[in-house]
Length: 397
Image (cartoon, rainbow, N blue to C red):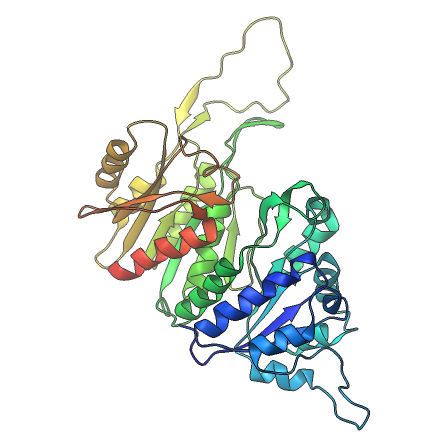
């Protein structure tokens, strides 16, 4: 899938730099041509001789390679490449990329890059969690860069947590999937996606909601955008950010999401209903904060409007609707009932019994159920689950 692709691999000063050897091997094995650009700090962790032996190309580190006027052109690299991958990428390099601080060959190459840029962060857990690092990563995403999330695990510091660079094989597969997606098999299609929770107000400071982070829905939106779709993302109250390729509509309540979804679906080719919508809302919303009393408080709830059912009734020939079902018991039976009742084309089932795969997690484990078949998938990052789901959608478009 990467045959003939030209990849610039940026390596920074991280203990994970040794993994670059495995990334190079994976890229070349799939037919790619790799040019390494390494920071001065990166050379403290892995030698250019090793990298050059693997790529069969001189490693670029400095602007000037000799004292005879020969120099390395970051502009030429930006025009040459089909993609740039920075792995590992330290907090320092992420900050420079976000701020446009062009003080080394890697950053100038990044700023000149015409091709998509993939970033695989690698650092200690506290550095990764720091607000400045998170803000810089969000900024890179807003610029259109693709972040390959680090994983939880044992770190060089001896601590355990999130910050460990994704495994080389997964990184290579991410690039491979991107170039598969770049066939734009959804080009010219409008896809509406709902994501995140909804909040139903009790009073000005309290609400009924759930733990949804929106990660799955946002991953689906980015996957569809990469495949050329015109994506409208209707997002409940979440802290996630979407790339500029995604049209985002922010909502809070089920009623707001219902109105946006029914409006946007009218001229859409597909809807993916990933949001965890509240099923009930308080019949009465207090205008003032409800004060604590001695007696029990009773809140009467009414059903919210069923977005999936309404879109199922609105569906015209050629339109497709994908639903989600999070179940606690009788999973497949309940999912099948929802599939039929709401006129869905297929439903994505996950279960609370699969620990670490539902709300707020980076992974998911799903089963895709249609009227014709059931297909189970193993536990994997939500970005990869999104690719699996969209592969199935493309087959029925």
